[in-house]
Image (cartoon, rainbow, N blue to C red; front, side, top):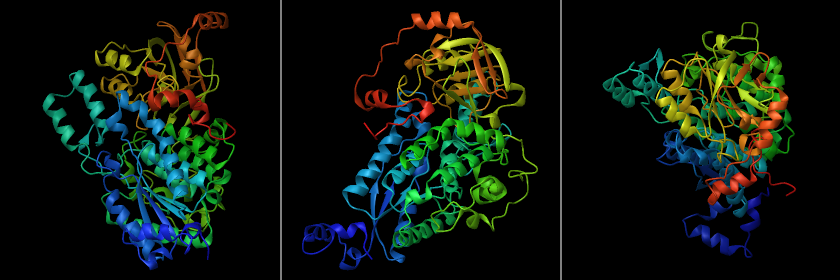
Length: 557
């Protein structure tokens, strides 16, 4: 059988390449096998990736067991938690494009036959899936798994977001310094992607929904032995995919992307899923717009409640049956014949899945709610679109009218919230934080968590052209497009204006007349950027709007 690496390993023309491999100890046997890239985003900065060195060892075992030769290389990975609330957060979303590019570069430069991609966290998993779709090689995504929950805090198992909530409680006098220090010690007891249903675990689940991960592998906790067995099985399976000629675009297509959107709605995943699924679709050459998310939101019941929608975390969801059990319940609404990396259809993969109890995963005839966990809004503040997460918003807050308090940066908003200057009935407006304006579209997670900690989650709202963490709750609307830096209407909002957020009606509006809006925008001037060099400056010039996935287009340039 012929495969790509054979092109550069044939004697005598390519003996120099063989010699280079042999200098590292590769044998004649190794060079007769397909070369399987192990794209490992291990580092000891990101808790979600801390275990990937060991996971990679088991992937390599599986590859060698099945007759392949593993060749491992590193991929960058940033931690949203470490980066949040300062300049570093502006690099997080743009890192997704770097990751996709690095997979293309390494796999193409070295004529690799296939890829196993090891990642767990927010932009790493989508970046890897984007790279796989672009390359169209045999590829499997293997997540590192979630961390275990921490101490009991505020009625649930703590996680890293409990620290931000505790900070708000500390400022409000609801928690003392000793209790806060103890929370720091006990909030996150193990490595792994953060245990809530944020973007990290949401995207690992989406990889299963797309058919790009082995069934059940997304939610195995990072510290469980089962994670290592899944790694070995992934290594064996990728070699079989090479022999079968099963490549990424046979799996990532319109049918599987629709399945992923359905899954996102059924589990109330992170709002960032919208950006990432749009970006993966682009790399796979599939036309997919935000209207699909709204269509499926209206027609997909919310079946699984995981924090921030309810107290259970992702390890709890795993124990309840995980993604296979949820997909089985959702199967009548899915494209069940969609092909997966197993070589079987999605329906075949989940046919024997079973859920444990009904406390987390419910059935189609007994859902948590009749509509999906994410929603697309429009209105005079968001003509192109905005994204919110009804699954995490109290029913009493899904229609909110309030008075605008405007901030032209996340830092200014966080300072005002920290100084307890936000009052009940106000809508915090954070703008110039979109893909171009941020630049990099940072998350507004700290602001929402501080409002929650101060007891304002059910008394205020927050809208932004930036993003949100997957754990935010309260009343929030993000991804407002066009963004302020592109002259979007959010730039016209003034302190004291009335804003209406109507989630059931899918609207977010500034309550001024059209003539006044035109007058304000005619007087608007784009602020000068404070970042004029380096990768962020390049990203700001090239990135599309959030409504298009905040991608860098590379076709038909």
